[in-house]
Image 1 (tube, rainbow, N blue to C red):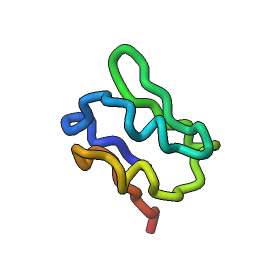
Image 2: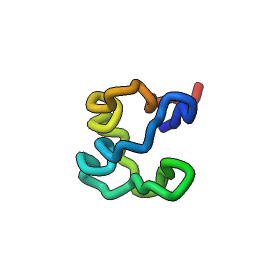
Image 3: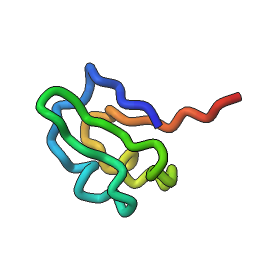
Image 4: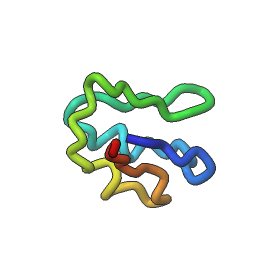
Length: 58
């Protein structure tokens, strides 16, 4: 999972839909707990700013 920081306005929409509680807003950024993230993509699909994407390692 990757945050495109220039796109994120920290609205919290992604945090609210994450079933794994893998997302957290700090004062300056959205933080992803990669150990908790299940790559379900709910946050990617709901983000109004297209600030999240799933990157698969090759």
